Length: 196
Image (tube, one colour):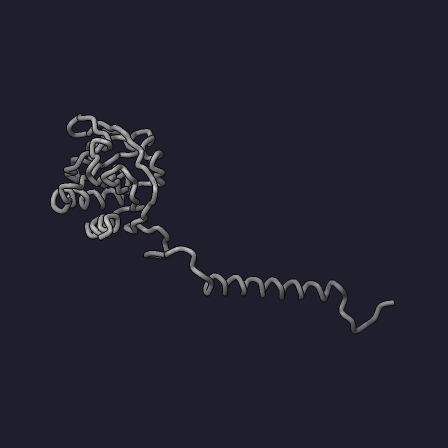
């Protein structure tokens, strides 16, 4: 015997599920738009955007030795103890690196204090391409190869360019993920790690 006038079980469950699903999606949308922000969002909605300095604590910079492309001289990070090192990982095929290179070269030539040195590491790049890049952008600071990426891996480089700041005592002070955007950003990072 079927009762007329009462909806079937199926007729009651499907609309209830649909209403619950729509309510859940609306709640998720509201949470996304109005909920707490757990990370600082920079330009274009990116977290850790280029030019944003990320400070580190209690990290020692891994030492390495490279052969400078221009002079053929072996250079180790420990050679620069007592100076702050702006350590830039780059590659010739990297478009942001091509934009950043003249800025770093200008900083080294005109703005870097005597206790700051710029050191470039060509990561995952062919030697001839690296040398051409150095000539093309008139890089006036030391640059060495990391063709297999071993140094980049030791530093945790996620992609190029990335620029690290190594303190005079060999402490890894922080990094710029992506390209450094201005000389002022370098100055601000150096001031923040020196406390003034």
